[in-house]
Each structure stands twice: as structure tokens, then as C-alpha cells.
Image (cartoon, rainbow, N blue to C red; front, side, top):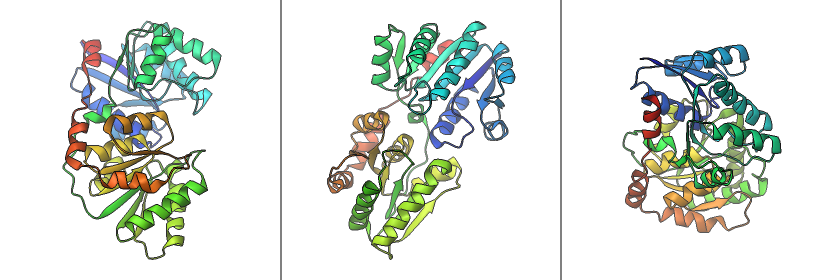
Length: 339
């Protein structure tokens, strides 16, 4: 019998990681007899890209109607249940889960990072709702331990869904990638220090600066290019923006090195065997770097960047690929829920 699935997440906002997770999730779901509806900030674009039904995330009557007609709500992936980004977004995603549980629909928390939640009412509500969820998978041990401290013992640890992404082979050239995003702790001092190190080690290489979500990344990427040019006007630089996800992936596959802030920029490059330095602004980036044995420097750190760039240059590509390929996404929790 056909099952109706509603997917709730940060979709339709042109965020590379979230959109790629949605793509992988939909490809998996389409192996089953299902109808899929995505709650999206840009439903028309989501419909076109993924060939699914979509409704506006904030058209609440349509959201509730879609949930009433569904059999299963999938909440995730990504880091939805936290209030570091916004307490409003936390309550929105909890509201969607509450509606599904009120109408006795099955609920799956899919490959999420949970927390931090500083709002006490938000924490209480999150605990209450997750205790009723039919299936919970989280993508890091910190989230797993948090849920266990709440008395939620049926959560399962999985890797990020994009470890399951099939990529064509890479073709390394003498090109260095830089991927930056706007973040409150990303200081001018750090950008200047990073630019000086990039110029010192890669003055004779093409430098591509990647914007993964233009409304957050583009401005800081253009600014970083201007810093590089002020240090050495002869550097070959290009800011990559206004690209589809497939175009971004295609452009990354030719890199020899990548210095990246975003979790999924680090992950995709590691999957290609590209020597990668993670710039950490969040625990999830630290944890990914630890799991993949990538060098990692915090963006609010006074550490000497040269040390980490040399660590990146010395990474063994074959060992990196072997490590990445050992991470396999476990679809069995979703498959069991669909049966």
C-alpha cells in the first residue's frame, strides 16, 4: 500500500548541505511505494528539483493538511532541534512534530544533530516530543549522549547521509579551494591571518573561493578575495557563487586542497580524496574532522595557521579515501519504518 511521507527540514533556502541531504533522502524513498511532500521555503523550486510535492513551510493550514494526509513525518536531516540559530526555528520544527504526534502519525527524527537548547521550555517540549517519536537517528555522539541524559534510550547513531552520496572520480589540478560562511566569531583578524598563509603557501596556484549559500557566504567570500588581492595583486583568484549544487560538486572535484568552514564542504572534498583543512565554527565540524583525521583549526583561535596548512599538505590521499569509504550510512532504520 502506498505510504504518504512528509519531510520537514531547512529546505528551499539554497543551503548546499540541506538540499543535498534532501536529494539523497528522496532518492532512497523513491525506491519504495510512497508519495512525498516536502515542507519548503521555496515549494516551486523544490517541486522542480526533486520531482515531489511541496508546500510552503509557513503556510500552516497546508502544513497541517499535508500531515493529516500522511502516514509518516520525517524531521531532518541537519541540525533542526537547537536554538543557537534561532529559538523561533526550534519551536517551528517542534510544532511540526507535535502536529504529527497529535494526529497519531509515525515520526522519524532523521540523522539530526540535537542541541544545544538553552530555552528551558524548548528543552522540556523537545524531551516530551522525542520520547514519543517512533524512530530517532542522530549524526554525532554529543547528540546521542544528550538524548540519553534526557532518558531517551531508543536513539541510534548514524553518519551523515551524504556519506552515502555517489560521486564520480576526482581529477586533481593545481587548484586550492577556500570555502567561507558568515559567522559571528569569524573575525577580520582571522581572515587576514588566513589570507597571509594562503598567499605564502599557494601564491603560484589558482585559488577558488566557494560560496555554498549566497545569502550567507557570498559577501564574506568576496571580502576574502579582496584581502588576498591586497596582499598580492598577482594571485589568480575566483569567487564561485550562484551555482547549483551539482555545479559546486563538479567544481570541487578538481581541487588539490580545500580549506573549508562548512561541514558538508569538508565532507564532500574528503569523499573526493582532496586534502582538506577544516575551519571549525561548530562542534559538528570538530567531530567530522576528528572522525576523518583532518587537521582542524577553530576560527576564534590564535593558533598558528601555518602548522595546520602543513598538516593538510601532508595528508595521504589513499588513507583519507579509505577512512571516508569506511563510513556507510545505515538506511535500515528508515527501511524498517516504511515496512
